[in-house]
Every structure is written in structure tokens, then in C-alpha cells.
Length: 197
Image (cartoon, rainbow, N blue to C red; front, side, top):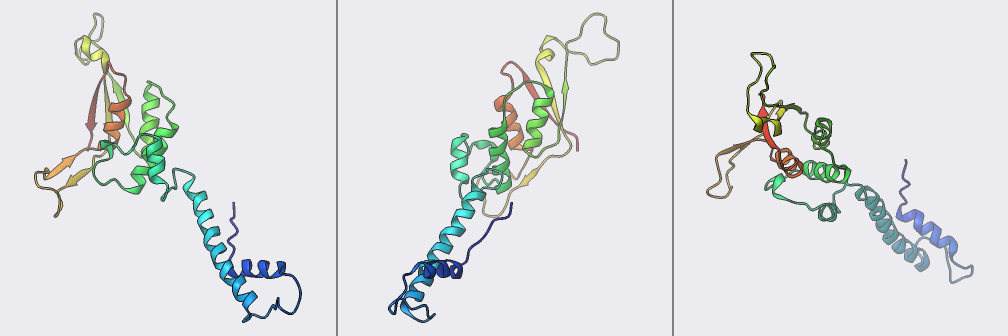
């Protein structure tokens, strides 16, 4: 979709064409009606540009100025994103919450992670039972409710000069993904994170 951007001169020309005829309604560039039309044209140009920006901000994946309104409508910001989330992280978190239609399957959680910008795999566990092959994973009945999210990398956040006193020197993990998955996982399950790097 191409968007037409109108300049002040275009608005001034349109306004001048609407003026009545006569000696007092001169069309000369330095006369009062033309200068007034140009001044109004500059106002209309600003409003036109702001209207086009509103089209961009109407979509959460590209919003900048309406970010706060989008966050409020989906219950953000929350502690998941940490102290200083990037604009891309904030946008992806809004989009993930807006497009989330619920579920509890492996594919649902993999798709949600992808919407947040992460590539994961999921392992499900089962308790040991009579008749299973020897050498398999061993566990009690609690393992029926456990599942593991495998991530290829993890983010290391190091302490920076100017950070608050008492903050740890470094923290590992992807808090946005962990927090979002902990928030929506089935309540009876135990979620384990595995960073493969």
C-alpha cells in the first residue's frame, strides 16, 4: 500500500483554488491570501504526517508512540521483560499476548515462543512403569506432570556501570520467555528450562 504524503505547497494550492475571484483575492505568491494559504498548508501538512504515523502505530508490531496504550490493553509491562526491555521485545510481547488463543500442546508453546522471538523444543516426561525398556529415563509419578523447554542459547546480562547497588554481577536466562511460559503453563505442571549452549 503506497501512502500519499501531501506537502504544505499542495495544501496551499488547493486552498488558493477555493478562494473567490476578485481584486482582493490575489493569487500572487507574496500577497496576503497566498501567505495565509501557505501558513495553513503547513499546519495541514503536520496533521497529515501525524495521521500517517497513527496508521503505523495502529498495529502493535510497528507501534512506537502508542506503545503504552497497547501495553495497558494486554496487562503490560510486567516483571517478565526486566528493567530495560528493548522496543522489539516490548512489541513482540504485545503481539504474543494479542495473538495468544490458549492451548496446552507442545506446538502451542513452541508457537508462542516463536512469536516472542525464540526457537525452542519441548521434552515431556513420564513415570516409570512395568514393561518399559531398561535403560530408559527413570522417574516417579511426579514426572507425569513435568516438561522441559530446550533453548539453543541463553542471554547473559552483565552488571553495567551505573546499575543499582546490590544487583548481581551477571544473570543468565531469557526472563521474557521464562516468565511468559510460567504465567500460562498448566497449573499442575512443573516446567524446567534447559539451555543447551
